[in-house]
Image (cartoon, rainbow, N blue to C red; front, side):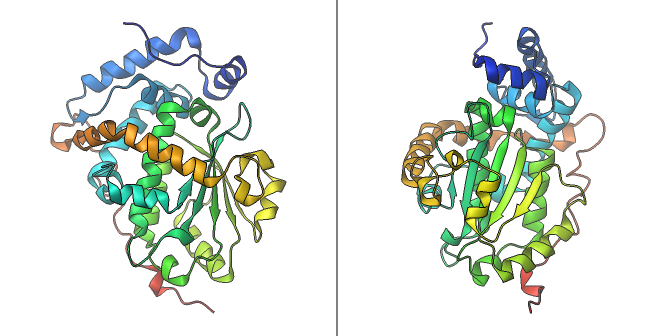
Length: 311
């Protein structure tokens, strides 16, 4: 069967080889091996899209065993994280979340071979009409579509810029530790993309207290750079202006252009995402050890930031 995998620009292909251990002469065969494994795993009901599998392979530096583990994790976590990974319908509620500009993905990567940037503006969440779970659902849908369609994202990774400007205490109080812990598990142990850097900008005093509290639930060594900046201008010590949108003093298009593109993209992928509800795992049919999530590795984390006392 002819491959549908996209050819790479020579420079990006060289980076895929050095960073992801990708060998063009072997990748079709390895992708086919993972497809066969999926079809023969009785507990696993998942898509066998070549480009998605390739993104998982790149994330795992083409280790087949690590790819199988991460792919399995991605679909088995759905049963314990349905508020973010379940019911991924492209409906008016999802499009409304998008249009608020909570998450903006600028048109171009940082450089021709560089990572893609995501800008999150959580001040745009209306706590009376929405909640963080819906915002997290939207961003993880967008990230999966990037894994499917953007080689820069699957090879060079992601840079996440979180703008804390004008985020109110009412909005911050909605981020309970359990949601954050499961989201971090999804990023670190399941997702087919990796974060290269995370930048918090325009952070206020209350945000620093929340940040200190959140870090207690994260590993002591993070697999990405995590930087906190008081001003957005400080970001340009680490990223070129070409990476950010015009609203942030960059040159990477207007946010409205990005939102229009992603509205069209979500509508284009409406059927793909509707089929997504059928995917997951049946732990009764699993052969061997139960999944990490079935073993309750995410249990024991509950509560809310409302318990946190601020000076």
